[in-house]
Image (cartoon, rainbow, N blue to C red; front, top):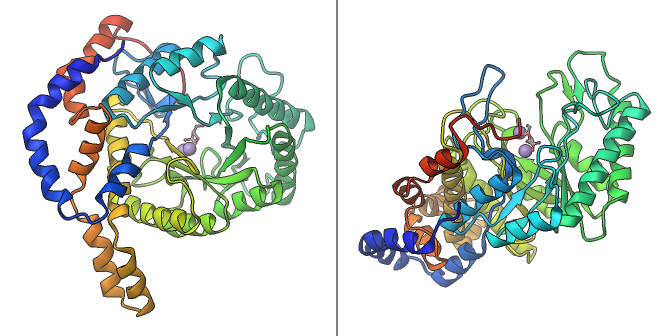
Length: 424
Ligand code: PSV
Ligand code: MN
Ligand code: MN
């Protein structure tokens, strides 16, 4: 299914006058308006292939109907998203959930929807039916060299598939760790993992990046072998210039100061980018901005400051991806909300009066520093984000259009009520 542009334009017509009023009101207050609009237009966030179906928990899964049954249908769904918000122009695949049978045809289909292939994700946290060795006790860390070799080869295969699709990054998330004290020799697990990562690193083309994710716990509940940013940083620092630390917002212990982690990783030139989501308790993978939008803003504030200080390109020098999946919303509506939340936080961060903030910092004026940040955070930038979508040919009200055009109903007619997307 492909959304026709004229239908989006028709829907926009009905909202045009009200939107213009709101836009003029905010735009009048923004000193760096052209810069903000330009940066918003260039900013795209990759969609993970596993977020297009309803997620589940170990207690159950409630399918929403009309879910994509194949990689082709996942690409179509992201095409719908991108047509509505013009900011979802990339897809991140998970191998072996999404093995492309014909890479050329898949690449062509994605291009038809204006999509490119973002980072490739390997999977050594589940056993596949055709594999010789089990990952029950880890993969890259495993005490048995044969298991490590199998996991390394899988990652190299993922790189090969990524090359065919035009991707240029490999994301490694490891479930490796231990559930009980004494189960694992931490140092040996680290050394084994490092040796395995070295082999994968050596197989990456020169223009590729390795994104090493960390996660504090789960599925292992006593130790995780890449548990936090410090441990990921140790690996990527030893590995070399193509390896970076990836920050998944849900992978921290409660109340961790993520914005500080972001700032320091960027200072060291080792920040890969993000998996965006939100959470209340752990790795809840909820819609971005649904629980703690202020934290998201503070992260973007550090990003903008750090990227500018290092002369980085906001849109291309870091990896931007959503990593969310849950039980109750329509996945496309949920992703529209996530992308919107990210763009709102980014726009707010672009409004921060940097000169005034630096002055406040140099004068140890904590109250003024807070005023400066919250002045930006409390600005309603939604009309700026909507205007940027409109100028790019997207919808002023993406969820409204998704609903009024009955996209989900049509997908159910086409694909059926009881479809199950491949993935977790
Ligand atoms: C599991 O925590 C996880 O959400 C990681 O964040 C990965 O990025 C993702 O699954 C897909 O492998
Ligand atoms: Mn992740
Ligand atoms: Mn996660």
